[in-house]
Length: 263
Image 1 (cartoon, rainbow, N blue to C red):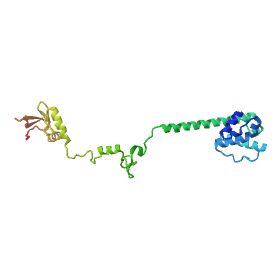
Image 2 (image 1 turned 120 degrees about the horizontal axis):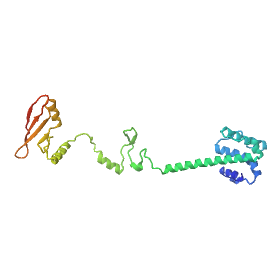
Image 3 (image 1 turned 45 degrees about the horizontal axis):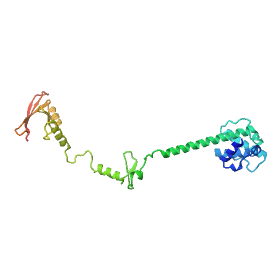
Image 4 (image 1 turned 90 degrees about the horizontal axis):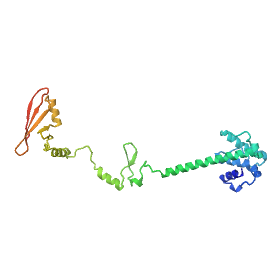
């Protein structure tokens, strides 16, 4: 009991008042338990007689501690009372010392868990939830808003950010045509690879001389009542297409037409 009492005194910073005997423990138990309760539970016992050191006052003060613990929901045995503590009953003293030692151990365990959680949080990778000059460089004070509506820096001047802007932000709208016919390039490549017509007319000829008409031409012909057409090219002496003959299949009405392409 003396060792437990002295460890509790050290916890409240009163280790200079070490208890060396049971009579000394009996004499100081009431004041010790008042101090431990107020420190561990951060609750001041307003009715404690602090200046009165009579046996009656010590028993009254110890009873204040017992009543406060029971109000907190702790189940204290019936033999623990303020009068028993002030009288130096060893069973009552032993119970109170063990109770406060267990309370101190729980408090230290919680503090250790909190410290471990803070240390783990400090080791975790930092999540970028807002603009950080360390990663994004300097930025102008005005703000823009992204697609989620959250404010962000207008323009970063970090070298990587500047390089990205130079590569991708040329002021052009991605879906607009700025005068270059990329379709002509693809048609030229396709015609060269397939051996078909590479004159940019929009028709690609296979090895059998069959040339598929353009989609818009097919739509116009079929809407007019002509069926699907097979187009045969007649090569001229210089290797260019001299004329094209489109033969319509049966549709809502039958017809044949001649297409002449000048080259």
